[in-house]
Image (cartoon, rainbow, N blue to C red):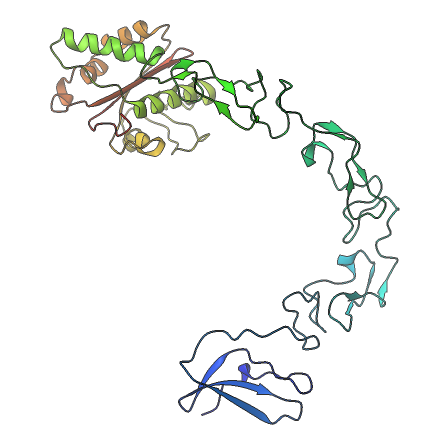
Length: 364
């Protein structure tokens, strides 16, 4: 029995390089070969296995650690990748750089307006970068004289507090980039920008279960239920979120556009499972799973939906006048055996939805 040959490695004069521990005749050994080719076995107490940490050795044709290259191991580089026309690239004797003496052509020349090799830029060739791409508001980006970096002295810095959201600013003063409390998942209120322009201040926003058109629909629904001797259903923040997300999706992306897709459909433009919901309810799971996909609510969700609703009262009236939707609201027919413990609603640009769930919302 002898150690595996792939673990024996020739090294430079007087040195050895051990890559792995190897079991040999019951001992854990390190295998090395010195320049006079006599095998040297270094025994080690303890079990076998594990890597032996060895410093990189320049001249062993293996580029390791901080070595730029080592002998024939050029880490995939060649003359062309360094900006030359062709030729043979070598590694220098210290393994900390390349020897391009046998490469053909001039190689990268700083000042010829062509960024090549390891040049960051060269004159007017900025490799597609500009002040904005580097995080500035605007201005003129230049290349420095050594072609190894940019000169940003002509760029204008983005200023938080000038009421203009730019670059990676989420907002700036009164510029909220079209956002408001409702788009942030609240019912109403006043949205503000924080002092560092990297986020919103929602302290002036009100929960959707406290205010807004969705809350009005829930209140009207519960009044209707009590008129029919049924208990009111607690407003669910999670189902409010699902409701608001769906009406925005219906308006913005029109997933119900194809003739066979109805208002229970979801687009592929969000962090949810898209579907074309058809009248045969083949995609029922697409509806049932939306609360758990979008919120902490783990139970199934069931939805009434309408288009062309002009107000919360108008939406409820549309559902009252539809026997199937009315049955859901009043627990009639196939819904008689269910107890609704959570409800949410939303109204946006004529689209209205009303979501029901049998589980209590952990968010309140």
